[in-house]
Each structure stands twice: as C-alpha cells, then as structure tokens.
Length: 156
Image (cartoon, rainbow, N blue to C red):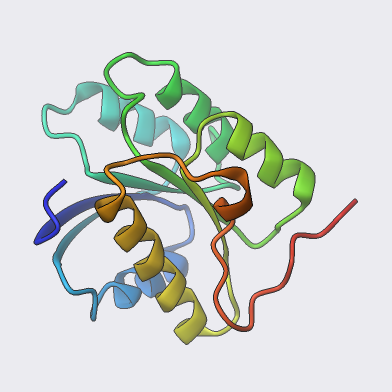
C-alpha cells in the first residue's frame, strides 16, 4: 500500500455518516480517494467486479441487504479479496460482536463517536496502522481502536 495515496472503500447506508467520514480524512497526511457504497450487496458486487481493488475497506456493521459481518465473511472467504484490510465500525461495541468480528478476520474495530474530533483521530489512526503494518491483522488486545473519550467494550 502506498502511504502517499490511499484508496478507501466505505460501505455505509447513512449519508450523514459518509459525509462525516469524508471530513475525517481531510487532514490525513496522504492523498485519500474515498468511494462510498450504501449497502452490503452493492459492496460485494463492486468488489467482485472491479479490476482496481481498494487499499482498505471500512464497513458499517449495520447495513441493509447484507450487514458488515456478512460482507466480512464473504471477503475473507474469497481468494481474490481475503488480503484486503477490513475495518468494521458501529455505534455498538458489545464484546460478543467485537469478538465475532475479530474471529472472522477484521483488521480493526472502531466505535462510532458522538465527538467528531475523536472519530477523526480514530479513523486516521486506523489508516496509519493499516498502511504501516503491511495489512497485518491486529492482535486481539489492539483490535478495538481507542482514543481519548472512548468507552470500553460493553460486557453482556
């Protein structure tokens, strides 16, 4: 992955969240190209039919048609896609869900934040980690990215 230019594919059905995500990339120290898709079925069709795969995929956990977990499983079970770094994010951070995402091959998990500054720092942290770590999956203890004002994983 080229640190000077990062192609990002974002799958999120909420237009406001897509706009916030785009704004979070403004100060990232690399050129970013953001493509957005509004549901899981469209995401998978795009990934399976494109000749130019993204450098990283961000998936909202709760999407229509196919949710983030279903997409993650399809990506990680496809020989042409399984190398893609996939970062899931959601408003919920239930331990059972976070563990399930880790066990199915997600690289990182990010909890959506009420504060834009915290969300921005976390998105930039995720991109930095993915670009600097050659797409290696995080260890379990580093899987959920945390910046200040973040809440711990909720135990059930």
